[in-house]
Image (cartoon, rainbow, N blue to C red):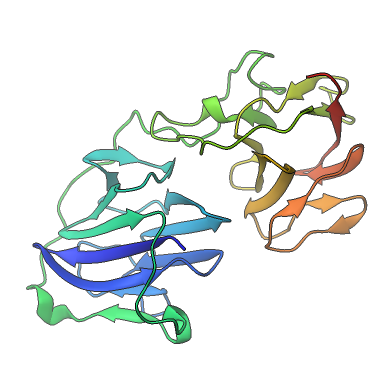
Length: 258
């Protein structure tokens, strides 16, 4: 099970198992990981876990979120990555065995203010080069809609690295059935492909050795597959499933011999 190790100035404060679909980090007490420091925004960042993969998202924090020294908006975490939030560090460990088998999230974990003096919020502006993860002007070979309805995983920022996995025998394809892009297709050749509209509804399709799975990532409403709303868990896709996402209807199918 993946975990993160929280530290400050080289002192390990806590090891936290990523055993929830989403954990939040911030100064407010309702966060799963509360860091009582003025350099940390009330709701600073979130980590979404899909199977054994984890994805970091900055929640429009004041001072930004950094991975290995680089500002990020959204990215996939690789084993050993260091997430920086002010003076605090979150080290991501992909395959970890925690000594305590009880749930880390029986109650939110708060970082006491005593670990460091309250520091003034620094004017560390977010970089203009941050990418939201959905490119507006992709070609048809990398996406289906110029408005960002679909985007291959290559449309994410340079820190987004698709996890390696063995490929299914048949290539999956998504074909748009409604809207101005009806008839266009996106081949699911990457390990991860993002679908949707940021701020509205976002999901990812994961390509794995035993098939394709769709997982909800962002938005209050979950994607609909064959007329039924999926839950927070990864949902397996079958040949000719109909997906409804961000107001767009699309069909998933397997291209034989791919």
